[in-house]
Length: 139
Length: 87
Image (spheres, each protein chain N blue to C red):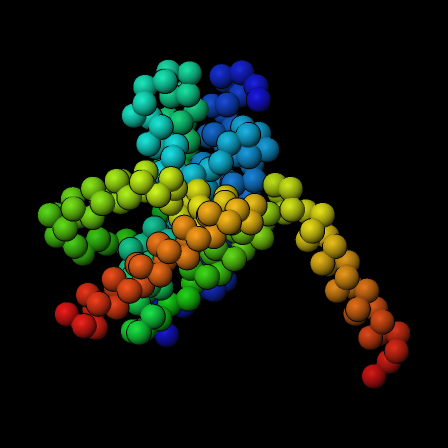
């Protein structure tokens, strides 16, 4: 095992769970990141402001930690630009096609024991593991 | 629930904590995600801890609290029985 960090993983997970609960209790909304971002494209001005606020907060919250001493470990994306673009296109299309991503299905949906979210999460993690296996160990 | 301003503030509050959690857990680093997905390589199970603790807190905060309270109380009852009966 390489780079296993259970304590920071646990602490970060508690914060994310808190965020999901906060969003549902205060706003009555699922904190699914792909749904909130994708909804920005529908141009319903009533919803645009809170959606934009969520995106701004997400970036600010992460940047706040990255600006501290503990969080200053470099995050580097090693893929080439074409690979990044193709990957991002597939992520955007796929999360809308699947009605959610890791946060919406994997956290909000599974926290409610939603059957379709459990199926969706098992499917995308399973297929992702298979993809990594094929690209890293077969090809 | 609430007016426009309340929605904006609630979304901002939630996402600030969400972003902080993502950064703290290391899940902004693509290498950590690929490390988790690469079960046949140097497997990094950190993501299990992130999702596990996030699910626990989210479920506690959004309606499954009675279910968790039931399980915790049951475990405390079992522990009490074991403790009273002695070694």
